[in-house]
Every structure is written in structure tokens, then in C-alpha cells.
Length: 174
Image 1 (cartoon, rainbow, N blue to C red):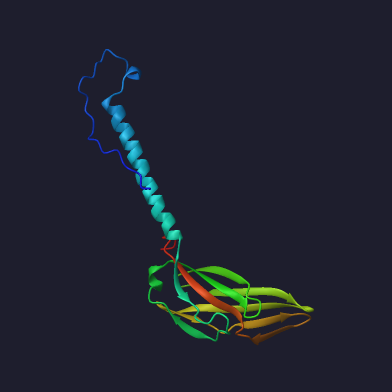
Image 2 (cartoon, rainbow, N blue to C red):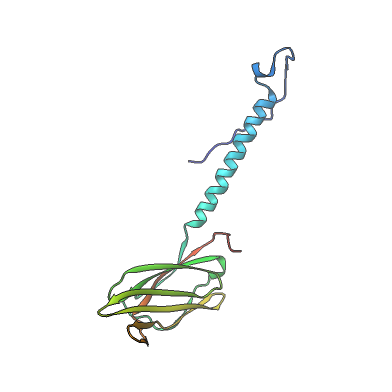
């Protein structure tokens, strides 16, 4: 529900009655101050509502095959320059499908990472996304790092599967 402002014209004293103490009467100055405070408060609510609306975000890209491995590729999003912050939602792997997300700023590289214990060693999945142009992101191949007595690293595009890229117009990073 939208808030309504006080719309009466600015009040001017008609019969100020100087013999009556200020605390015992309502004056034009009192009424104009009330109008000003209420209307300024409504303006602030409107500004805050706009700022909150910017936090909502817009889905800019959706993976058409989220259950499949995801090879290195260029993702084109014509509206990328319109947003200052992004969030990418992704599966940790095609088998587990635990969803994570990470935020990144316009023009910056981002790493998607996941970790979990498997058998007698830990696994780390990593995939980064880099800006190719103002409207294109390069989603690189994912790698798996197996951590035990030694580290081993192998390409594995079944890890860190991008699901969605969401854009935010926060105005914080312009």
C-alpha cells in the first residue's frame, strides 16, 4: 500500500492571538512542520523501497542442461553492463547436486569451489569464470584436486556445474 502525503497548502496565520501562550495553541508553523516531517518521511520510505527492490535480482542466464557436465564455454549475456553485482548458483557435482552460490562484481573473476570427504581423501572442485568482453563470460573447465599424502589435479567438468547467473543493480559498486 502506497503512503499518501499531506497535500494541504502551506498554512498562514489568520488570527495569531499573541495573548495566548504558544504551548496552548496550534499555529501555522506547527502545522507546516508536521506536514514537512511527514512528507519527508514518506520520501525516505519511497527511496528505501526502491533500494530494497534492487536487492531482488534478476536471473540473467540459466543452464539449459544442469544435470550434465559443463565444458569450457563462452556465455553471452547482453545485459551484463546493466548490473554491478552478480551471483552464480551451482551444483557441487553432477552426482551429489548440492547447491552453492558465490557473488562477484562486474568485471571481476570468480571461483566456484566445493569440497567434501571421499574415502580416505578430500576432494576440492574448482572452476573459474572470467570476463571475456562486457557482454560475455568465459566459464573455464573445472578441476578436481584430490588431497591425501600428495596432491593430484585433473580436469573434471562434472564438478561446479553453473545453474543460474543472477544480476543485481545495487548501486554500491558503481
